[in-house]
Every structure is written in C-alpha cells, then in structure tokens.
Length: 276
Image (cartoon, rainbow, N blue to C red; front, side):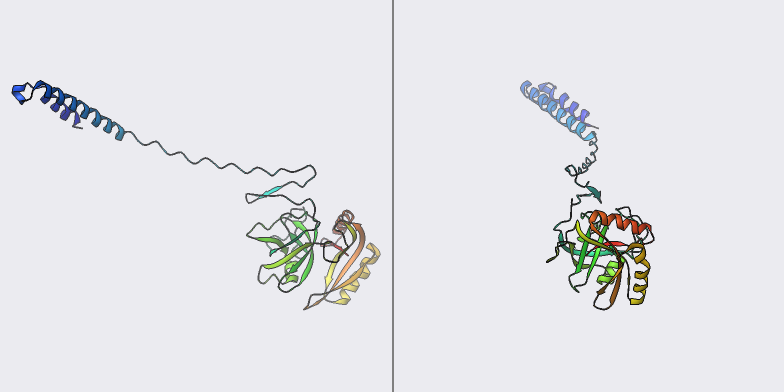
C-alpha cells in the first residue's frame, strides 16, 4: 500500500527549511505531529481490516428434559416423541372427552405396550395414561353407539386424539369410515347409577360375538363344560343384533386378569374381561 510513502513525503516536507517551504519552525513541528497522527490512524485502520472475523460458534444443544419425579409404588413415566407421560396410579373416577382414532392392519400382530400381540379384531384400545388392563366404555358422541374395551397399549401420540381404538371397536362405533370421531371415555364402574367398582365386583369373559343365534348357542354349549357359566348376552347396535358369548366368573380385577390370561393360553386369544 502507498500510505508509508505518502506519510514520509508529508514528514519530509514538514522537516524542510523555511527557505524551502516558506514555513516557520513552529509550523513545521505542527505538520510533523499531524503527519505522525495520520500515519498511526491509517495503519490502525489497515490492521483492523486485515484481521478475519472470528467464526461463529454453533448454538449450544438444548438440555434433554428430565423424567418426572414419581413416588414409591407409582407407575413409572415413559417418553414418546420427546414428551413425558405419567400413567395414572388407578382409573377410579376417570372420565374424558376428545377425539378417537383407530389403528389396524399396519399394527396387526405386533407387540403392544402391555406385552400382548395386537389383534385388530379384538376389542382393545391404546391410551396415554390409563393403567394397562383398565376396562373402559367408549361412547360415540354423535351416533350414541357404545362399546366396552380394555386398554392394552399406549398412544395415540398424534394431535389432540385421546384414544386409539382397535379396528373392531372402531367398526362397531362407526369410526372406520371417517377415521376419527368425538367420544367419551369412562372407566367402567363409575357410570351414573352403577354400583360396580373397577377393582371388585363381578367379571365375566367374552370369547365371541355372532350375528347368528345358532352359532352363538353352539359355542356356548361347547364352552360350558370347560369353563362354566357360559351364557349369551344380546347387544343391539341399532342396525344389527349381536349375540355375545361369555364364560367364567370372578369377583376382583386381579382374578379377572389371571382368568383372562388363562383363556388366552387355551385357545381364546381375543377373550377379554367384562364387568357385569
């Protein structure tokens, strides 16, 4: 750059004798001071421009949210899609309204959160916080159809949906076509006018449902010697009459879970407990 030569020329001119420049000694000194200051300013400016800007640092990673604290004996929280969920210790008094969806062939035969194999033709559902094994009643708020289900999976984790129904449950409620529907979810045992407790009372076990009465009668006759208390319960869905075959009898939810597992191991994988 030419700045040093320009400054040198100014300094040389400032040092010239009065006869050469026509300036007095005091004026020469002032010229020298001005030239020196100008040289320092210009040199500092060049030095500043020659230094590259420091690279920008990447943003610090956001800390992972800690798991919620739990008391001894409470269900352990779990995390899904970056959010923590804390299952309820029990379902007594549970009632909820929201949007129901359903899941079917893509998940059929896969493992559920309870460890069971998902059967899209069974009457089960997925819920984010209800205890696994909870018996619930789901009511379609538009057509007023109802169905009793058992929670055996976790979800749904999409949008504002509160429950994911099995294909069969969605079919009975009339949800398969539209895909979603507004529903009411109630833990069985807290229905208005019901004295049945969720954890004690009378439980039987549904092993099949038919639209033909003779088919239901044949299954009832076959099962009664093996399991006892085989009987048929009629259910009018509004557009069709179903004959539900049920067997067995227990008085606590713990016994019901054990008996249900017994039926599942002995040829009835879709059997589920029902509170009478």
